[in-house]
Length: 208
Image (cartoon, rainbow, N blue to C red; front, side, top):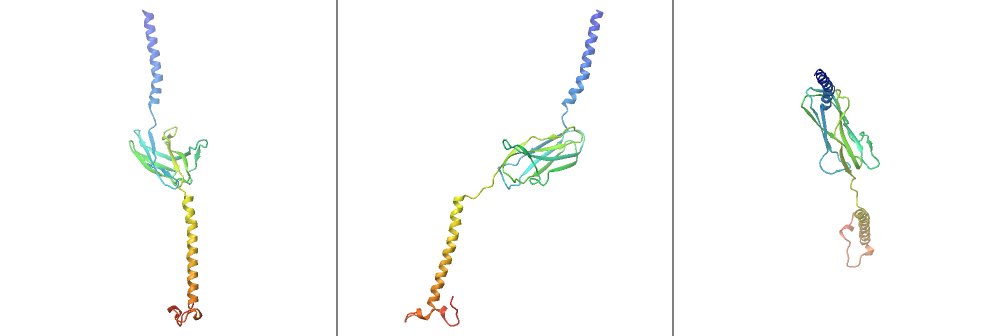
């Protein structure tokens, strides 16, 4: 009987030790970051030269105010076989912001404008650095595609490129013929007996 009591006591001690070890670890594992971040792409097709806005949202899920949050945008090229980070120097005028204070339950909504300078497949993400966390909090990657600029169709440009100079030459040639005829008509030697000089050939007028 005494042996059974000792075994029971040993079992209780083992179970209590296991709870003391695993309990705090499980509790800490269930606690996620106090900040949630998301990014939304604009609706519709995108093409070179556009200046769309991506909507970012940073939410404080914790019970305490968050201070000194650094939020920045990241852009990567997703071209197959040529994936690489893209420098935002020419793409965005606002690459990062600092949030001085974000109260519990509050959300900071912000428009992140971009200037699309090259076609292709890309992905963009929003990252938050919280001084209270050991690692940054990153949104889901938002893929998007930039279409190239529409170019002029050669079949439409060629007739215009040829026709306009020909039209100008034709008008210039017609003007020269008209001036030549007027000049000849104003000379008395070219008039017949029953013709009189026109009004533009009168006294005080200069031939063309």
